[in-house]
Length: 313
Image 1 (cartoon, rainbow, N blue to C red):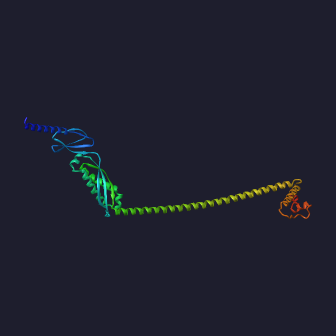
Image 2 (tube, one colour):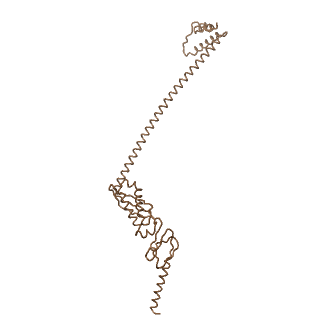
Image 3 (tube, rainbow, N blue to C red):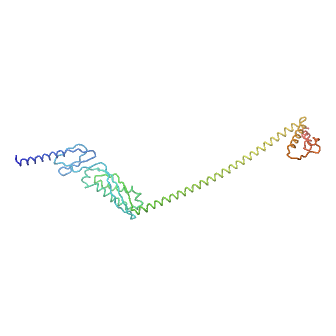
């Protein structure tokens, strides 16, 4: 065999290898949540879903492979101006997925880059209508507007934007310092207001307590006086009843035989006992000590029996 034969055999070997390679390339195993776009002779032919597929070698070709899962795309920081001419830096994240692989392949060259650029321009336009303070409060408004605009464009791009989240809104250092001072002043104002309200409530509570204490003391004093008055009344009534009862008993005794003499003897005995109890070096005695009945007459007991006996007559 000459050299030409080797060349021809080499060419046929290369052709055979290319055919074998194309044959293996025509066999496609598509995974879940993946779509393969097939072109036949340069034109769109079909979309391969998950599973096993066989293509025609040298005729069919997989030109695009689209991932149908939801993906997160970072929106890099950009400078925006608010309505009060304050420059802020804003970045975010887009959560999106491919819903139509054909449109995502042929409707736009790079839907990811287009979605990021559209999100940035929409964010700038929305922030331009808000002042600085509202940009921190209206994050949901900004996100909703970006999602709305991206959904309108995504209908022709074969994508769906699920949500857009703003990660950071960063004002300049000078503005941040001023905002911190404002927040600190507001916090101090609230602390002063809270302290004053607490002191006010404390004073009110103390005054209410003093008022209730005075009322309770006056009510207690009133009740004490009422109780003392009632006690004195009951005491007087009891003494009067006891006196009346004792007088009745004395009258009953005097009306009996020998009652007057017994009473005179009892009173005389008490009188002598009282003289003994006097704490003095001098004792005054009647002129005639032996006249015992005269003492009783001086005490008013001489005619006691007669006075008691008169009603019975």
